[in-house]
Length: 437
Image (cartoon, rainbow, N blue to C red; front, side, top):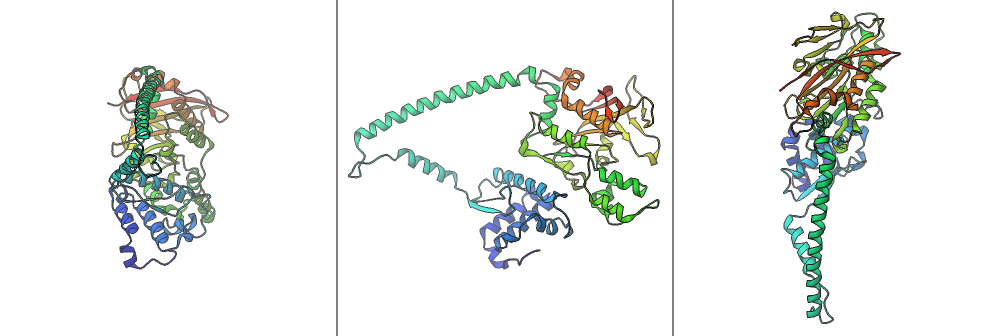
């Protein structure tokens, strides 16, 4: 680590460091070792008087084991984890750390933790009462009877006014809520997004890893999730056909994605139900398994560009098989209903340019959140599925039976058919859909 650590005794006796240790040992941090390491590192450096060394590059090298020549402009892992750390600290102090006498936060635009005393509830109440009962004194230091009486009348009047104002505000807010969130607003689309965006949970939007697709074309074989998740595929380049390992390594180090995926991510962040403080756009290679257990996820692209879909595919009914080395491209329908096929083939050379795409709304691995997957065999197919789920009209029509009541939207999957013209997909048409209890 950069800088010298402070003496052990000085840390042990420092209440700020004790607070950090309690936070790092809390359930919200024990299950997130990188966030714990992040907090411990920046706190230790700050308490040691080494705040000047805390920047994005030093944290990336020390906490996230990035190479000294990595470019923070292309790799936002420090910024994304800093956002998560701020939210996790907020959750701690709103929950089990509510009684802590000290507070620590990391202001936006900085990586230096700030420690501040937090007044107890009794202190706040006492101060408020003191301000209310204190009044102007006469020249002898004794409050006059007239001024006291006037102040009591004024206080009573203010109380009445505040009560009336409160009634007006509550009534107005209730009417506004009923107007904008009444039964006519409880559409399937509204329910989908309110279940994807929650105040108590992070929502990760994950565009596809286009660099991975290029790298696989160069080396001639797919990359398994076990290799992708640990980053081993970038360390030992193995080519099944003649290739330049340095070129492959260059592509694997870049963070390319498609414009359609980025447009989808931006559109999702502007959905009325979105909660900005709980949204993070995360590159696929920076995901961890715990994200599929703790967060809501919105994934764009097929498994070819995001191996993490292998974690969720066992739950899916409509499975996109997009690896040409494993056989013909097709969508597998695991449990076909009456009138459905068990296999929907995809031909990239089809003269009519017909395409396929799927949408899956499923529970996360812990069942305490949701995963939304939008994918197609081509960029145009994924884009068509993204438009279907974000414009709301077709989705609401397809699932109109779930509108107008207070029930949750059930988990579901949709298979879509599209026609692609000059790289753009036409309006998608639902071919089959399954709803799960």
